[in-house]
Image (cartoon, rainbow, N blue to C red):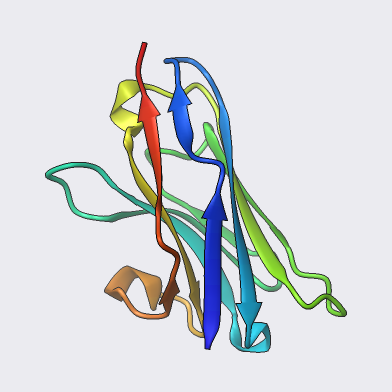
Length: 125
């Protein structure tokens, strides 16, 4: 079992920045890829970015450039953490942001793997 705890969401003004973090614990040796997803009201969940344990990153074409994913998974660490730096935020970025950890690439897109509880990001003036 893998447990995920997200942090860093909140209110931000348009044009501002936020940094989200997601800490994994438990069977972290089973994690190959960690990713960030978001779901806005009335919309389907979408992939923002994911990153493998080897550092290969994949971004949504529409968000690449403003969002940066990084991962801290030192081999001797008992934790695996994925971060999402979000810049130049707009009201359209308002959503619940969730972290996913999976043993296979693509599992998160089908809803599989482990999920955090989600953190709300609201971009408003």
